[in-house]
Image 1 (cartoon, one colour):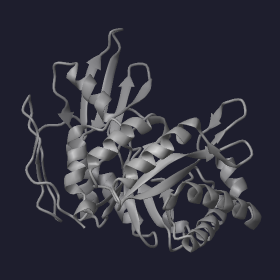
Image 2: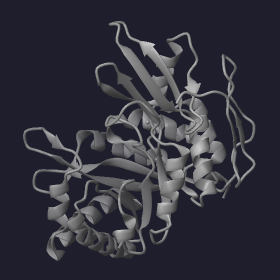
Image 3: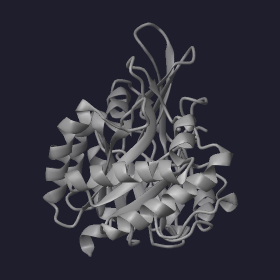
Image 4: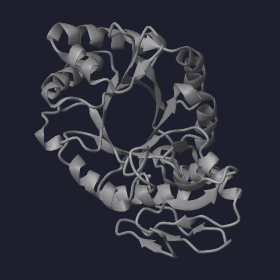
Length: 353
């Protein structure tokens, strides 16, 4: 997402000591990081019910909730799914119960075709919608209409796999959309992939930016953690080249690598259930803080699982904070472990303001 023994993490920015013992003893967080961290999180349209459960358990620890739910159709128009229509009133109601939390709509460059197939992170789509001032204006009008219709307080664009030749036009879209949203008293946040060459981009001032600090290991690789402390420090340094407000996105859960090459994404709760089904305790990797274990399924196939728990996430956040990053976005709510939600609540400074 290395095999580990006992490790002690000592940070420079706050007095945080995390003890990771072997065996059946429970982990103890002696002192949570008190570092002024500001948290946001995503809820997806395909897992909104358990996402709302986690949102309520966070009890005011978030400053923003992002509904990851709007895509594109075959005509390059915003595509609304039945899941989105069902989730929308429930998510908005849960968010409004905390009067301070901002409600943001995330738009993703996935395209739904008429035959029911999808193209994920469609680079051609981005090329078309940013190509001219007229195409950008149409897209901006569609976005503003959708967010104002449903009472969102902001917009987030998660456009990935962007071609090098499209970045100037995409940056123009960011700038034009920001200026339009500002007249409506709406915010704009931009999601960037970890591999993006930010030094070569002319990103506009004004929007918030969040850099994805994951995909170190996943479906594209062999077993390992989604992120490690070295990756987080490297990306935090890259963020300093981006104008204005910026933060890092951290991914919860993990992956199951099966013998033969199949890789399955896991929520934290699913990973915990698998871990509880085997006699040995998961081990903790000192380079990332992630947990890992192996098991053999009923068909005799061997599996390796890596996942993040509350201790992992607390360590990642403290590494980011020690690197000067106070804004953390959590991908994603839904079947998050109780201990992880508790850790996020303890770390967040949002509810203390």
